[in-house]
Amino acid sequence: MRTALVLGALGALLFASMLGAILVGAVAIAPADVWAALWGGADQTTGTIVRDLRLTRVFAAALVGGSLAVAGALLQGLLRNPLADPYVTGTSAGASLSAVAAIALGAAAVPAILPLAAFVGALAAAAVVWRLASLGGRTTVLTVLLAGIVLSSFAGGVVTLLLVASDRIALRLRAVLGWLLGGVSVTDRSELAMATAIIVVAGLAAFALARRLDAFALGDETAATLGVDVDRATTTVLAVAALLTGAAVALGGVIGFVGLIVPHALRPLLGAPHARLVPACFLLGATTLVVADAAARVVLSPAELPVGVITGLVGGPFFLALLLRGRRPVVV
Amino acid sequence: MTALVARAVRAGYGARVVLGGCDLALRDGEIVAIVGPNGAGKSTLLRVLAGLVALRAGSVSLDGRDVRTFDRRALARRVAVVPQVFETLFPFTVREIVMLGRTARLPLLGRRSPDDVAVVERALTVFGIADLAERRIDEISGGERQRAVLAMALAQGGDVLLLDEPTAHLDPAHQLTTLALLRDLALTRGLAIVAALHDLNLAATVATRVVVLERGMVVADAPPRDAFEPELVARVFGSGLRVELRDGRPLVFPRPLS
Image 1 (cartoon, each protein chain N blue to C red):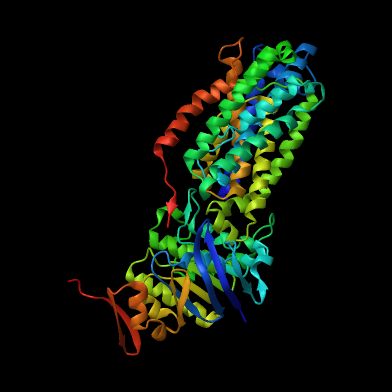
Image 2 (cartoon, helix red, strand yellow):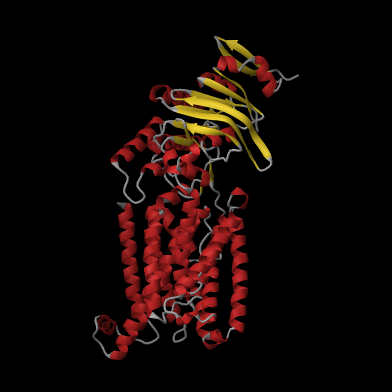
């Protein structure tokens, strides 16, 4: 009952934030005209701005935020680490590296390839973090963070190299740079469609993994004795988190901290079980990024901030607070 | 008729051999205490019985079938394990923790059945924590948490319970009542229970059989009275302990310090 209430409230919040985000932008359009444009009325320019630019972008922002938050919940559950998320673990950096590499190799000409390319990089990065984190049989908060730092700086180095060296990227350097800093942009409808399809499938898979993630919260060995095939579940969780991260990075670049904050904000409301946490994370993550993206569009209007700047400004201090609080696990 | 049988089991970690050829047969309706000094291999033997450790030699079978041929889900419906260290970062309630015991019996997506709910409520009642069901696992005492984990293992609905120091965090009175409860579960419900215990007197009081481990070998496997033979206790645990028989039961005392 409480879960239904919270989920309903989060759904309403997402709807309201999307509506609000469609109302604001570099060009001032009266709410009545926006409303008319949504239903195909209004003049052509307004129609293009509202439907093709704002609506698409708000939809993409919602998908990106929702995916990052669910991926964060998956990684926190699997690594038993409250500080894990796609950004901190370097999974997003891995995704951006392989996406940039795909652009440099000319693969951008293939429609809808970016989310898949980003998935490959995200999967590789997530697998490396998991291997490093489980060295010595125990995952510790610190090794995950260190692995994330190493991966992020490595991926960042290679990305810079590609940016400087690739003629193909030089042609669209500004766009690629803006995207790397975290900026939701939809240049290609087929890419949005592909990312949406991936996110729907991976989101459902994340929900299906909920019980196994709950068991993981008690440690690998207890998960096994509760009936979870630990190796297979680990691989599946990493793959699903990588799919979500890859799709999110393809649409929005590297956006920090959404995946970290949202699960934390929800656990006190909904408790730990992932069957409740996963759908709630999607809704609140989507709302968070829709709002952050709207803020990025209007704060310095008509100039636009990368949305990564907004999430970084809010998320950085939050991350520090979590680190300082240093919550220890409950040990019996 | 349950029979969990380990035959000539050798196991270890890396270069270290922990168990050097152990035999243990477990039948339903008995509670077996595994005792031995630190490092004797008690936890490893339990993990071997649970199919969690790769064997270097020997075999473990459940009803005549090698445990390695069970998938984890099927094995979890038969054998439950209570680990020595249990940790979670996340704010599960006591009831949610006990419900985790049903993991192997729930469909991956479907809802829990009334039967699952009933089993969980019974397990909470058996261990006297029904009134804590809605409390968060990190807000209750260590002893209450330990009973929550025991309830989780019971809710798995298997016929074998493997317990590693199940009463380590309980005060003496709760140690006795909890172990008496486990003994009762073995005798009345026909569960087969193995518990690694440090307290030799508790072991002698509640166990129907005692297995003494010394450096990875079983050196005694008998009812308490025969297992705690004074010379054996002195050899395995050192000469600081003295065994006396009282009313036919062995009692272990520390010798006065000089």
